[in-house]
Length: 413
Image (cartoon, rainbow, N blue to C red; front, side, top):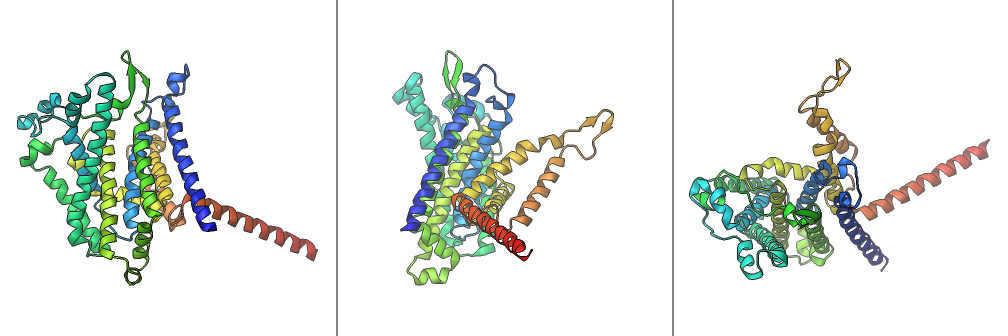
């Protein structure tokens, strides 16, 4: 009963933090519209909001990988491939008819004549409230379809590869991602995938900004990826805390014992794999909207390793750890250490080592230090509320021991 109350309390805290984060992002992004002057870092075009957008996308993908690797114990390296499927599904379905000839100019046009938004514009209208409704619905439908396409491919390849374990499963899923990347760059699929060229001109985050009289009256370009990422992560949290999540953890801890307790290994492994791939596909859609294009050569093994590194730093089996590690990782790599790439002079003296690429050297050293001092990641397999309670309890114990030691020393004197 006590444990259930603690779990409920943690859930309320996480929900409150999510709502608070959404409201804070909305306020910060529109602060320049409220106040006459704000610091340059709070302008909607600043690096801060670029980092927040990318971190929101990567946090969703990192949590989806943690669901599979951390909670089910299946070591998969196919996340970039599932992101590719989601990104291309969204891009192919959302390029407007007016832009198809320009985007697919090497192939004389696209295989699909109309986009989802064009179809819904015919129902709701293309301007005013109708245009807004058609935009939101078309993006939402394409996003779900992107996740479903990734989930379908995960189910198809999961049938043979989920019989493998450990490194063999990782190699199989990694190979799948590489094969997908090669297929999507195949020139014969050009009328659909645009070959090795990028697909662009589809709706991005900036299209959700509210305009009046040609001016933006409310910025939502950072709020939208945060909203989608938070909703998806909450769904995964609910799954982890359900009976299915407990079955995932049992499989991770001991497959033989889990099967002896009546857990269907094949069913639950497939469910975890498909669910993780679905949200990775949604993450791919968000990433395509972030970079404003879809191009297969971007979704490399490096991207998968980057996400895996985030999961390890945050703690394998910790959702809040993955989120915290994502924002710290993206901020360090994309923003905070940028000054190390610029040559700097103090008078006529040139500061040594500061040059293009030095940022990544320092960043790699920081990662090595974090991994050395936090062997199980920042939060281990604990969530943030529980980790805070443990830190407080350990601090209290240390304080009591210190007081007892002081009392003994005073007594001996």
